[in-house]
Every structure is written in C-alpha cells, then in structure tokens.
Length: 216
Image (cartoon, rainbow, N blue to C red; front, side):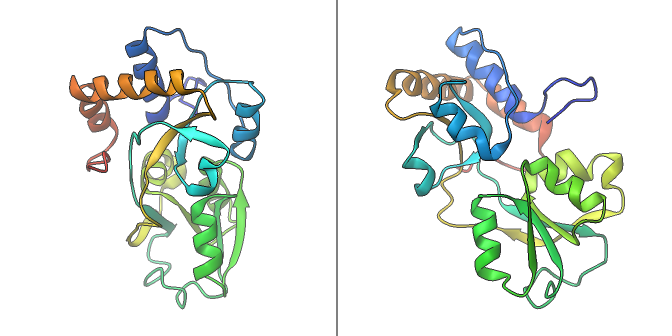
C-alpha cells in the first residue's frame, strides 16, 4: 500500500521491517504487480514476497513459504445498502472485481457463475475499480478492504457486505521465498517467532486491526 507521503507502507511493510530487524538484515523494497511476483522472485529480482500472499498448494509447487504471519477472512464490499446479501442470487448479473489468479478468483468462478468476474492486478486496485464504477462489488481480504479503502475518503458510502467468508483450508498468509532457500526460510521463521514472543507482533497488529488476525 502507498502511504500519504508516497512511500510504501502498511501492515505488510511493517511486518517485513520487523522481521528484517529481528534478522539484523538490511532490507530494501521493490514494487511488483501481483501476477509477476512469483516469476520475478524465481528470476532472483528479489528474495522474499511480503504481499499478503495466501499459502496455497498450487503456489507451494513453485515457491516455499514461511510460517503464516496472518489469517483473515474475505469480504465483499459494495455501496452501502445496494444489496441485501452476498448470495449468488443477490449478485446475479452484477460485476464483481477480484485479484487475478488468486484463491478468491477461483472461488468466485466456481460459486458466482451468473455474475461477471473482472480482475485487478493488485488487491488495492480491486477497490479502485469499484470506486470508479467499473464493478458493482469488490471481493478481497477483510484487512485490505477495511484499511486501504473503507477508512479512506474514496471509501465513503461503501461498506462490507454480509458476513465474512473463509475460503479453503485456511493456510493463512505467508512470506514466499525461492524453492530450496532453506537457510533464509529458517531465519525468517525464527524472526517471526521471536517477534510474536516479544509482544511486537500483537502491538503492531493492534495498530491496524480491531480483531485477531493471528489465525491461532
């Protein structure tokens, strides 16, 4: 997410900074379209992906993941009062925007066959598309929809629609690394465990969220 000063910011960036501090490593950040993250990682353009990437069996075939660093449900977002609920019947004939090549996109394709599904390259762009009227409903992380859209001026008049949805087995969100980079994965997992043990993780999460995101 881009902070008001134009710099990268948000929970993922703060988690990455905290893990780097625990590892006593000097880390730098690069921006990358979500679709291209895994190919760029495997091309050694960077060493880790810290971008709210859900751990899935399909992704585990091409990258390794850290232990989960959060696990939150998915939410639909629409104009407040526009729909009674988020059932397939209620959204029949409507356009839903979702992150391309994501578990949520697969869920929509399977469940919302009578809706038009369109795609965004980044999760924050889901809500940009919604705000400019290219979709009737957005579908994404409850965290991103709340923090990056609903709490900002462009989210005025919008609301989360219906109850939260948990998709799949709930493996959570992890940090992706190249296959076989076992030393780095061990370091990252140790740093994450230490950050949780010293209370830093809860303090950071509480700054962003008013519910438990740990998945435990």
